[in-house]
Length: 119
Image (cartoon, rainbow, N blue to C red; front, side, top):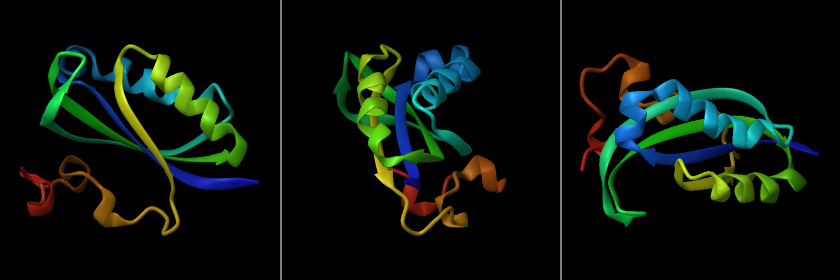
């Protein structure tokens, strides 16, 4: 059964600044290798992390909406865990669909991040 999911990736900000397209391609590759159909990918903020992950202090967040078979999610999470450029990933079923308020400041054209997204 195919459902809509959303995945939030955290990648190293230094590597994302060097080559964001490569980082995004690696994140999307973790999903598409197991049959995911990408609906939307949005670059969110670059933020200081609450705690270091693999000695990295700043992370770039990438939000991806995708359609996938329910049974493939565990394989996708495993693939992401093995990818050295992905610091963390969280995959959830997207019950409410893709909504405008889930978009990052860059996608909306705002000059600053929304109040709820600022540290």
